[in-house]
Image (cartoon, rainbow, N blue to C red; front, side):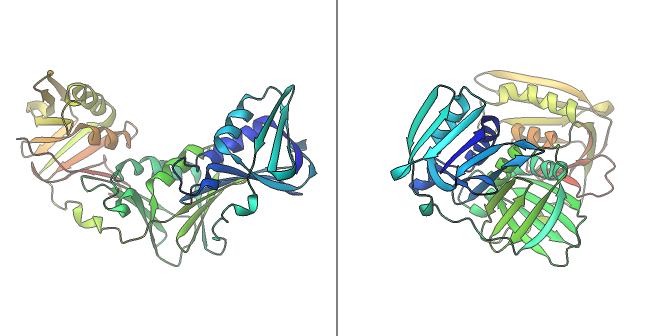
Length: 381
């Protein structure tokens, strides 16, 4: 195998596929990047068996030659070394040549590296998902769905299904839910694609986080393909595969309170800033506990107390407060994560009692499930 390729495009592809590679894999060859060259272009593949990413670089794009191929072939090169090498190469073009026993020479300008490669035939095959159901979704919408839900997945592997985001597709509506049993994030959007079947899948939070880093909002839409125990996200020159988590996701609809005793309308940005200041002293506590107490004239008091450090108290003006007076405590990090999902808009927080979960929604939301954040209080009062 021998070819010359534009360094910038090679670096971009390497950066994309490296996101799928884990140093902790039990399969040694998966610490490498698979490179294959044919008459269409160069394909790079990275995988940790849970996530697989395939980046394609065509021979010619917009009348510009990106790759010149002398001989076809394939190789697997250690991702750690190959990535570091190509990022530091001096010239705008890179020549890669594989000789006997998978010896690989990488040349650019006056620099020359030799790496020992592995047989590409030993690299595991990517899953087959081409026959599944295809759904188109705007990339900006997908990025919002991920950003507004994925932070609430569980970080503990005790219940593996909770480390993922539950996607339910029903009646042409996609509902994404994440919970770690202490909080819940929900986002609901209508789909433009007509979907006859119903789907209930759980996508690992790690997969969605990595996908979000790759997605470029400059691109219009992305195609999702659902099949068997895999989901595939297809972009023009990028394929992102993720396995789905097994097991039944809990029915989270029963966690959302139906009755409200108090309602607080407040700006998410100003409330977030106040919680952030209160958290400066609360971080020493195990639960990062923040206390909220309603005052007269629509004011609320945000406070925290750390016996070894000190205490903080701040009065925050709300737009309105109705219902029973309130004293409630919660995890400050959970609240800040939830507030960031609203992009600084005005929100309504509905309380059902001191020890009942409370719900954050956009103010005057037509669809109560368009964006919903739920937090379970901490017992202090």
